[in-house]
Image 1 (cartoon, rainbow, N blue to C red):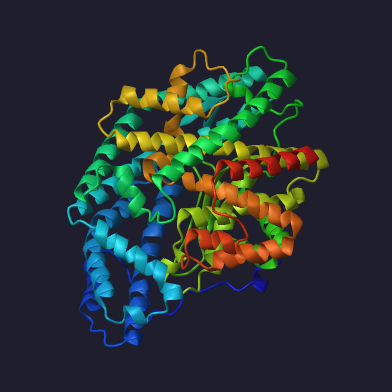
Image 2: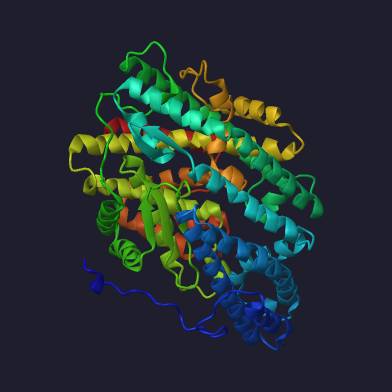
Length: 574
């Protein structure tokens, strides 16, 4: 479809702020906060107008910060872009926070709050009350420091490269060689990657130790005994508890680990190896070269658009709009931050997808995952309050992880060869279960880290080794690689930048498997329910949103077993 056939969205006409506003000082926006703080509210209509004006201000500020972050991660070596991001974090956000607290007080104190439509506003009001409980003036400089410190992880890891056959490769590029059929190449590349990671192990440990202490102080200031308990409240985990997380860990260990063990025994036998090493985990069992469905980011974009059109016309249009607007940066390159994300832009309503594509199968998975987030952004873009669009991660990741599995039914766009298509599906389904083990390990590790904030680096490394052993197949041999195992957690961006945001992937993975099961049975009905759930934004509780999607918000051992058995049965059919 030509770009001319789609409608490129424009920013809505602002009702409160000027149409053009350059945020280069606090003085440029302070008057709007003062207006909201001092404005008299005499009826429910005026309260709703006040809410919409506040929402507009928040959307403009959020989008301004978003572009600073996006540009910085696209080029971490550009000092000007880093400074631009840090300016907002250090010179704007600290002033926003106290005003935000005052506006929250004003809202909750309004006598007209009871006249608002509670079917829309109950969740929002609940969140505002929680924010008021947690707010402390003394945490503002700490949170500013945390925001700037945590970004150092991206700069450190983005600079990691290895030399291979005369070329400088990012670690993302290098990891693609771990699928090479030549075992000597795999081992050499793996060792080069780990050798490079070892150079910054102390630097990353020091960074994390600093972040732990800063976060712990934030928790103490807010009256909590540890940051874990504080963060659960800040993340708005109203619908499950710490004990539920522990139950999730146990369910995954009991039901998923045995499946991984069986698969790894088979891998060892098929590869005819005396010892299965970590560089043997990604190579094709039939000795075929790695799947390479696309050559570059442009091809990935165009084929993803075609795939999404096959799922639902509007989904293809969403990606086409993003392409036309330049809201995609997909190729891996030196100086680019690691990982991938879909950054919502709350004013324009068209998000930005960032990733590090090297042309392999996993890039398709990342793209359709972030594409699921993008769908979520598009279907909520017209919601009247910015906070309605900001869903909890358990819901946001349901949108993205469901799309990984739903899109799989149309991966013939990427894989013209039937055998390649089958390989890709098998890899995806194996990953959908195996990733639950890593998620559980990362989450359990973070519980220990913040419950024991005065731990030493040696204790931290030992604890990770202890935790990962509870979720790792015993078939792999790490003899001589003990140090690699101990620092394995350092590759996980979330631990540094967004603490405790990780178990949501696991909860959402279970939900996504159930959504996909519905899609296999009745595609149109499953998509209607999926989209209906996304359109709720955050106006309902997590269990209600999952129910709207036609699935359960459940991580009991019996439910994990039920879904794992379904995935196993689908694997056997391929």
